[in-house]
Length: 209
Image (cartoon, rainbow, N blue to C red; front, side):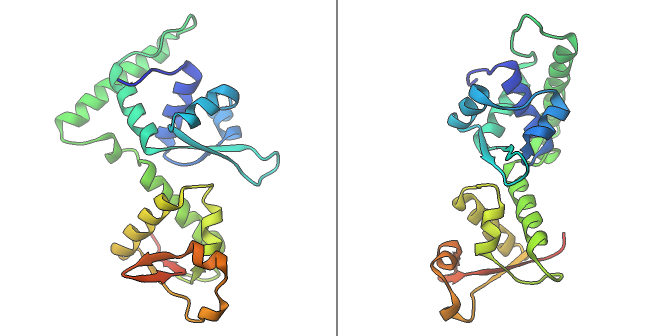
């Protein structure tokens, strides 16, 4: 498997996997007793396991979320069956690893995957898009400009956002349309647009889930 990580990094990664969404440092501290900072954070980010951005809230805390590579690492880690070695390794931690490993085997025998019971990164990004949309929209199924939506996604890469938006459009969960008044479009509007069917779309309406 890939290299194993330290206890703090492993605990943070598995917590992000279990929650399946972006998690602020204060919430992480409440859940597992520490925040993801310093080398622990930068190593995970540089390794491509997480995205980590400062958000515009009091104290500007970091918000972390698993990437696809991070999700894959967690799956390998859970299959090991025992936690990384440490002088202070707890029996409870060991027991949880055994439980996770056995659960993974149980899912496999039934042709199921962890993603069937815990949302992966793509689903998490969809949830963030829906949350940002609801914060911006003024009426049910109203139209929101992509130029306003994208900045609220915590720094999610544009290409990953586009993949989710196209899937939402394909499945009818969202509707994407061009701005009729092309003269009103700014450079930012053009950059935030998503191209589908040879046409740039600037507005989104999302169906209630």
